[in-house]
Image (cartoon, rainbow over all chains, first blue to last red):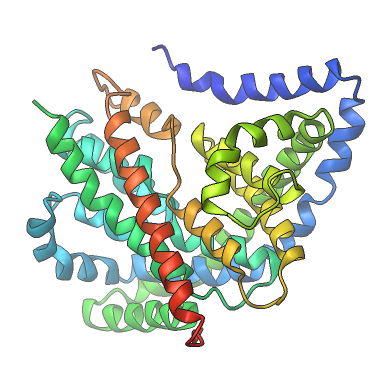
Amino acid sequence: MEKLTSYILPVITALIIIFGISKGIKVFDCFVEGAKKGFDSAVKLLPPLMGLVVGVTMLRQSGALEIITKMLLPLAKLTGIPADVMPLTVLSPISGSGSLTMFEQILKNFGPDSAEGRIASVIMGSTETTFYAVTVYFGSVGIRKSGCTVPAALLADMTSFIVSAMTVALFSD
Amino acid sequence: MINYIWAGMIIFSVIAAFFGGTADALTTAIISSASDAVSLCIRLGGTICLWGGLMEIAEQSGLTGAVCKLLSPFLRIVFPKMDIKGKTAKAISMNVTANLLGLGNAATPLGLEAMQRLQSENSSKEKASTDMIKFVVMNSAAFHLIPTTVAAMRQDYGSKNPFEIMPASWISSACALTVGLVSASIFIKLSEGIKWKN
């Protein structure tokens, strides 16, 4: 198990190139052609990303997130999510870097094999930063009306939190 | 929807700072977040270039077509109206593959490619199509077969078995994905009568 995961990306990159060469493709020319579009899309993403980052950073630095977490604490007992993991559930839909830091803290304070550490791991493995995905995906093509995307995605997130707590309880002996 | 959430985030933050005495931190946050967004954008631009290039090779060599064929049973369920051999389906399958392998960095640029193709098929240029909504919901409940980042971090913190959480993670992802897609379908059906306010 020596960092098996570290091989995934390099192996895939090599596979794509080898497959291309074997089909007689001019891989470098082809790469350059495909890479051209990259920065145009990134520039288009700046305005929506700016909005999101400002909102999320304000929430974190003002202490508003702690208030929200405290308000949600009664829900923790109801859903079986440990109180110390609750901040992660509040952060994970809105901030990728924030939830990574929170996850790290849980691993450090409780250990990766504790109930808290395992529930946090499952949550991290089964959710993505919802607001980031919505902002970036729709922002890149100029969609303003996202319809029911946010409510549906948030329902999915909540499902993942509750099921995470349940499955970890189920799998522990 | 986004408009209200965003306004709520900012107003609530200012109120919290007012009562919590964190106004200084909040001031710094507002200023620094502007440059944070720019560096995030540049990083994203880099990964979009990288994966755009690699995908062009995969596309021309027929690799994306093969992956798409592999995933077609799943795609047929989620996107019943989509042309399974089309470019959109190919782009979506590459995004799904990146998610399955836990390559979050690659999933976003590949997903953006898929969004562009979905947008070219979209009848309205401002309003998200049904397939777009499902696709974004699918990404926000990302299904990782191999939770790469999580396993690596667990190992760093001395876990006896960093991959032990995988089955629990699959169940949790599958449930989240199902709930997300089913509720999106229900919401879409409901909203066909009522216009959604954004």
